[in-house]
Each structure stands twice: as C-alpha cells, then as structure tokens.
Image: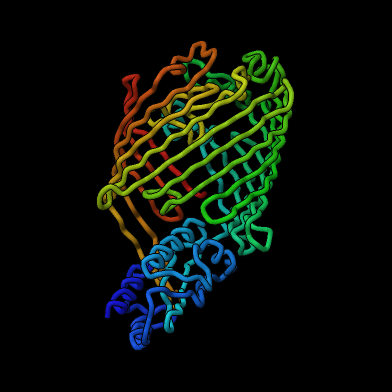
Length: 480
C-alpha cells in the first residue's frame, strides 16, 4: 500500500500534471497503478525504460531529449524522480520553443518505468512590422524627446525560430527611419552528434542622421543633420558555442567593426574616437559564459543566473581596451506567492583612458539603476546591487483546446506587486560637468509587473532617487 501511495504522489507531482486520473494519449494512469500494485517484490528504485515524446510537430526529438536531466537506462529512487520531472519541465519551457510542457509517468512494469514528455509548440515564424523608438527607455522618449516620430525606427523584421527543428534561429531586419540598417544573423546551438558545440554568426550595416556625441550634465547630447548621414557602421561576428551539460553555455567569438563619423562630430567632441579620428576599425575577441538555473527565463522567481564576459577590443593605440564584466542574480520563494530577488553587476575597462566611444556604462541596455532613467552615467568601472520583494497578485489563464491537442493552448496573464532598492557607483577619471560619477547612488520604489503571451513583460515603477526626484517609469520586454 505504501508503494501504491508513493506512485500516486509521483503522478500528481509530475510537472504540469493536474490530476492523477488524467489520461494522456489514451494511457490510463489508474490502470497502470493497478497493474503495479499486483507486482510482487517491488523495490524503491526504478529504471527508465522508455521516454515517449508527443506534440512536437517540428522540433526534433533529439532537441527535447537534450534538455532532460535523465535518459533511458538510468536508475532513480522515487523522491529523486519527482524532482527530475520538474527540472525537465523547467528546462523545456526555458527553450522558448513551447507554450506548455507536461512531464509525467506514462506507465511501468515491475521496476521499469516509461516517461511521457508532451509539448505544445509555439508559432515560430514572425514576419512582422518593426516599430521601435531609439531612446533608452519609454520615459526618455515621451518626456525628454516629446514622443517625436523621427526618433522611431520602422521597417520589417523576420524572426524565424526553430528553423530546422533544432532550436536554430534566423533573424533578418530591414530598418528605416532614425537608423537605416540591414542585419542578418543565424544561430544554431548544435552541429555535432554529441550536441555540445554550436555556431552563431551575423552582420549589420547601417547609417544615422543623428549621433549621441557627448554626455553633459549626465545627459546624452545629440547632433542631427536632416540632409546627410553623420555616422555609418558595419559589424560582422562569428562565434562557437559550447554547452557541456544543461545549465552552462560558453561562447568564444570574434567580431570586426568599422565606424565612421563626420568632421562635425569630431569638432564637437575630438575625444569621440582616439586622437580626433573620424574613422576606426578594429577586431574584438570575446568569451561569454552563462549559467542559468531558473524557473522561467523572462521573469525568474526562483533560481540563479550567472554571467561572465571578457573581451579584448582592438590591437593597437587606435582602439585598445580590455573589458571584464560579471552579473549574478538569485531569486527565492520566502512565503507563499512571495519572492525575494537580488542582483549584482559590475564592469571594469582597462586602461582607464578610453575615448568617448568606449565609456558607456550605467543607463545603457539592461545595465541601469531604477530611478535614473533620465540619466546616463559614463565611466570605465562601476556596478550596482539590486534587491526586490515581489508578491503575486493575479494569475489568470485563458485556455483554448482543439480536439487534436494533447494539452490545451493557454494564454497567461499574471501580475506582481513589488518593492525594490538599488545602490550603484560609476568611476570616471575625468567626469567634467557630470556630477553622478564617482559617488554612491541609491534609489528605491514600488511597482507592478505584468506578464502575458509570448514572454511579453510590462513594468510600471514609481521610483525615488538621491537627487530628490520621483516619477512613474515604464519598461517593457518582448521577443518581438
């Protein structure tokens, strides 16, 4: 009887499995349990006999099996098997290939068990219009740039995920507006039989009529020429990727960049490039390591992420920089539906005497502090620490099920309330008119985060900083 109850526990706890009596692909779990209860001398360990996969119309089985922490022929005890089911579900969802994943007990005979992995694939091809403002965040575009339409890029982008069913990605961008650009990239995670090595390559070529040529009073300063391009650029890269197991990936890459600016930009800021140059070209060699062990990549509530980046940019005095950056974050459930998160990040660039082109630090991309969205803080060394307390306040799902679907199609809608604090610092050897460098910076606030279909995240944050300022800031993140 004890063994019978434990097997029920496996079935109930299997990731995504709602009820023990549910039948998947016509397999009755209750019948399997009845069969098991009749087996004499059953032990507490089980050998995985078969892993059955369903719902993968395009994705190759090998790609799904690659994400599983178990394989056929391995032996597990009952408690460990339950944990492995959850790890497998989490890994498959984090590939961004599937809407839904079920990892569950399919059946057993004696101490041999069969496992079912049922998936619901996403739509992979997105030929969609491209519309994006060029400023660093929504607030800067709306408040400081008055939502000017000439600060928007528009065009066409083709995002083709899972091109060959091997989780490979091809992205093509045809962009007009603020930036004229054509870019193409292809990423294939596995090219060898052991599924450890991959390749990634691409290029981008374009031009701008406006350039951020300097930072004055901690604000970006721009020059615009409506009749001529003031900046042109070309970048190509290629890299090899290595993923020895499940959680860690290494990238070894090389890129080559050519960038040209007009004489006007040079006269406005002779230090934009080295020694008053109007053109630079340089190779960059880099290594990137990612360790990811979280419940959900786009919005982690439990788990850890570590990233380490080392790069050598340029080989002579024209461009000469070593760059080392590191990021680490952790999230923990501290009470029911309540989560604590912490993040540390830091960057250092050598030598410290760098042209303006290499001085971007806080306020660019995802390397920013909440409450300072209207500012940029250039420098050659710095970092931040963030902490947050998050509470789930809404969790809705709209299910659509067709007759042929093994598992329903679900459109999620979740909301989280949060409070947060930030601390950061950016060192600059010659800050000139900028006053946020070389001092400790702090901020704090509250917010609401909304998550929905295709990993779209919208954040509403009311933040306060050490300058005595407070405002509502908006942030969004989407695969599109």
